[in-house]
Image 1: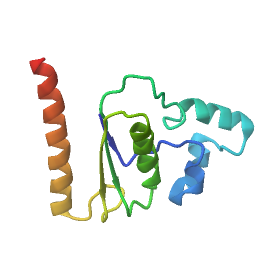
Image 2: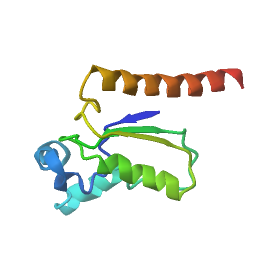
Image 3: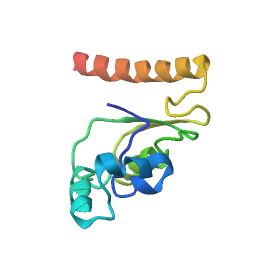
Length: 126
């Protein structure tokens, strides 16, 4: 599973970068009824340390001006604290595409294809 520039913490999204502009779409964590619904759909808040997840590959960008890289960082930290395998790549340049130019895009895509090849080929040979 590739989790690219993700929106994962639905109770704090409105406090980070462009997140406040999404309240009309997702609802407001400041409104109790909406907060209850947002918490139920929030991947970050529904993480289960005992669940058997596929190994995710979190991809983000330090300079993403839409979805704060803290979403991917926090989710990776949950996996780490639970002893679950995961991969994490944070490009220091770029924006919401997690790349600033064709060279960075090629690197990100190569990492993603390598990850997918290893996961899919490993499963097909078991």
